[in-house]
Image (cartoon, rainbow, N blue to C red; front, side, top):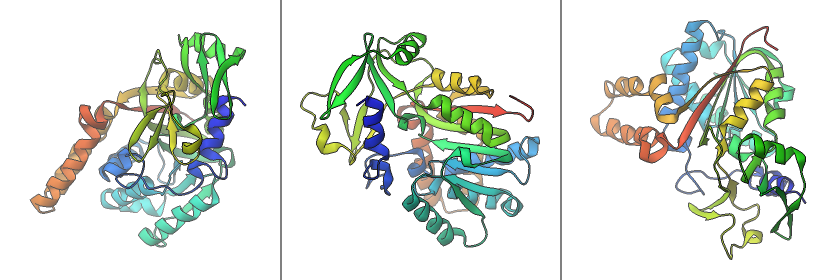
Length: 333
């Protein structure tokens, strides 16, 4: 089978890694910005409010997270909106795009336990099921979870019994590799369709996503497996892929130029790509810390400050992770 089919089965089949709830953080396979600090969602909430003040987002906008896992990030955003501009919770619609029924139930339960009837949350299985006027779309670490093809010196990989052979001619993959100046590495599959679905889901929107990678493609393979905070390069000699299949996360660095091109082809304007550190500071995460400092004991403030440092320090998540933003105005293609 093609490698993209193999990776899709690994992550998204009925027995795949993302088909059931997974712990993230100390008890899981990896950390994310969401598991590091609530102020990640807080900074995004502050940005959403700024978009309302700017007039780009309406007070009855749809706030939609794609791939919300447990729902922690969207819940953190709700919590900070309640603190900063509570009346917006009465008018915003909150939506999660989640393909798995079991995960939808986990998210619903978490929101019910956290907010009761104070927040209106609904689910769709894909962006193609959503049709709204004005929206803010959000995703955290989604583009690295798209299936990909593996390319090496003109040939595309196929998989048999978890073994990789580069022996397929695939003109689409070869064209993408040439476009992004790769003679080896991962070529993501599905960015173009995803961008088109989002472009059709709302008449006007901003989309913000956080992921690790660079604008230009890496010159080598970055494909790797995370299992209980241990990283295994996919091509590591002796690696038992059969044992890890479906039970651990598999991911790769994002080529943001590919994401950018996909959205621009769909008629959506590229706004910026910034280091997570810069993006969160620009959105006001330090101002939120100042508000906290004025209200709590120094010990609690110091604890939260240490968590925020995980998000913004260059040697932690601040530089490795990037924030990419897009906008579609009403009347665009």
